[in-house]
Amino acid sequence: MILEGDALRALAKEASLLPQEEMLEKSKKNKQLYIGIPKEDDSDNRVALVPDDVAVLTANGHRVLIETNAGKNANFTDNEYSEAGGEIVFDKKEVFKADLILKISPPSKEEIDLMQNKQTLISALQLTVQPKDTLKRMMDKKITAIAWDYIQDEQGIYPIIRSMSEIAGNTSVLIASECLSNINKGKGLMFGGISGVAPTEVVILGAGTVGEYATRAALGLGASVKVFDDSVSKLRRLQNDLGIRVYTSIVQPKVLLKALKRADVVIGAIRAPHGRTPCVVSESMVEQMKEGSVIVDVSIDQGGCFETSKVTTHQKPTYVKHGVIHYCVPNIASRVSRTASFALSNIFTPILLQIANAGGLGKILRTNAGFQHGVYIYNGTLTSSYLGETFGLPYKDMNLLRAAF
Image 1 (tube, helix red, strand yellow):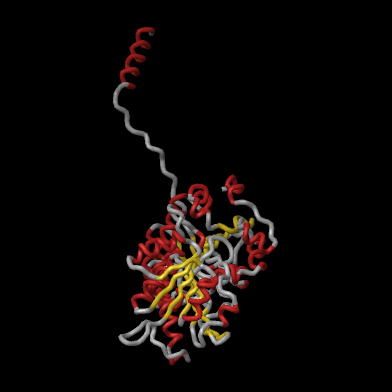
Image 2: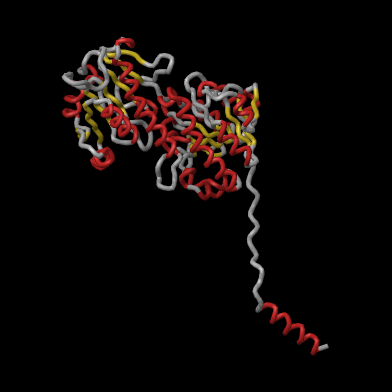
């Protein structure tokens, strides 16, 4: 018996020295997402997902509910969504039964009433139209709310804001051109210039993405452009990216006022990293601008950088104050809804797939700091210090809630 035991032990030792089959960790099953896409109200023509990306999500086993005509204003039909695997529903209540609601604009009071307890919402956070009651009602329902305009990528860049800013920069110049024309009761100026006629004078406030693309569009039309920003490094980067020399200046009140007096068009393209956009153009400055000149305040999403700015809509986009035409629509990209919808969908789809592959929202919040940056309510707890201090609501640092993920 002893010899037999020794023989077995020797055999086992010899077997342990042979190459072994690799043991891989069994991967966890991806979480199936249940996504609802409601139709936006009349203030926004965009849709969060285009049919091609709905097809990608449904092919990966996810369920997508789309309210009828959600893509109509971006020229996507219900039939296209249905063929892509989406489920068309005719009652908004059905859409809000989904676990994750994906939309463009902040939720209305009616939409919050339809939301379920502990639901996840991904939408914009427009500070100028975010009343205190909206936040409290979402907090009471233990909603997890994520602002897509505050989500960051690996480089710390806001990818959706960057994409929408490129659109807004280009479109702001086209808007200004329309406002200058006779058909819209403007001064009858052509945006740009021709031989023998002085070019249009354009002042751009902000040297970020909106400012860069507005500058490119204005220069392409032959306008004379002056760019102001409070950061020398941004102005230097703009010069380098454009590859040509343009007039740039730090925001110095006397220098800015001199430029405003000569300007035919002023584009506000300043973005604040947190909270409200600084107001750099006072009402007295606007009073000294030329009669019939145009202000396009792209910064109105964060409060606006002109003291005379007030939120307008696509239905009534302009008003006149002190003889100056003001255009202050928060979602300029909605004017080119199909292009903007493709741009948004290109970014939303990988994010949704990441959430699924990570095993759920809690898992991705634990590992993805950029996505976590967009959270302003987590399970009913306000995590934005700015919103908490502005509206007098209790809030907690997101890092303190990590243990709950």
